Length: 410
Length: 45
Image 1: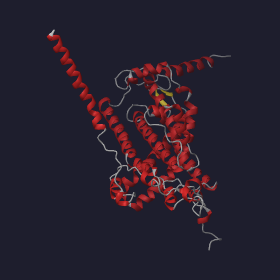
Image 2: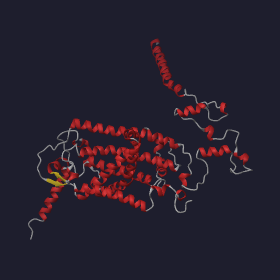
Image 3: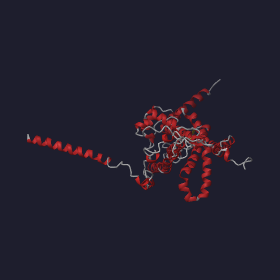
Image 4: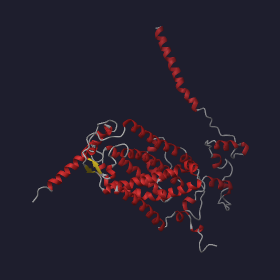
């Protein structure tokens, strides 16, 4: 009995100590004081501490200046006289202007010109100069490093069997034209886009301001005008190849062996486009379309607001709330629209650039005889046998059928 | 390689065409971003 009692007491004590340890973090959360800072020195206005805190990048709750001081400056007290300010105190007029709540009319510029001070613009600027280029650079750098590693370990993917010396037509003129229209314009857009994002920081120290100014102006011209060629190319590529890029069960088998990319001598059968190519196709179409649409919005500023519509749609699905982002703002200033559009455009562009680096790699350095498909359009038969066996069979059957038809006749 | 060269040439043609076309239609940056009030011309003082 006493032994049993001891066990029970020990367990109770252990449970109590465990509960104490589990409850300890609560004290940490309640540690930060949420008391209102003392602003008596300035009579309720901004203090030196507020200025210093803002300079340190801390968020200062500006309710003390956004709202009228309690008990004072009540506009209703002036309502009977109304006066030239429409029943508002001086202080309230300036508060409204400072926090973009004033009811303004402007002689030129429309809705965007009615926004005099846009607080959220500073958030956008910090994003555009901080996380956006930083994560983008890491993504591209990481992709290059990954490809270099792949090349060092796997080497160039060679044709395993004996080359036949015969060729098969893989891509006809218009297929190659559509591809190069898209690819050529994409490279120009990527380079000029990167110049626009990183140019000031990286190129001015190297080239000086006058030369960079010319480069930046040319870069913007190229980016804005080549965009149309990219959009046409996207449409061509989609129309020509969508049917052959519809996923099917064979793609799962191809993916299961990694397409043979990681193992020598493994050649899973594939039709005209293997699963890897289908992934690239759909990524180019979806990401490319998204980039094109946001790009159009920026080509015609303030004319094609998409963000309000998108955020409202997302809020209705409940997804942002699920992810802890809370309901996304559904009322945006025209400038916020353009700022979110820019952030999305650049983010998706980085993802697409990273993907295309892999595509360029495998089509040039990464695989022997792959470039011929888009270069001359004629590929070595053994290459086709190993990498697109099902497609080669189709071609052979079609040719045999045609030969049979046009064979001994009359 | 002919298809590639043709495509690159087409990119140049489209870019020039777009720039010229948008200018003619009044979509130049100057046209869109500044109003009549700031234009100097025969009517200006």
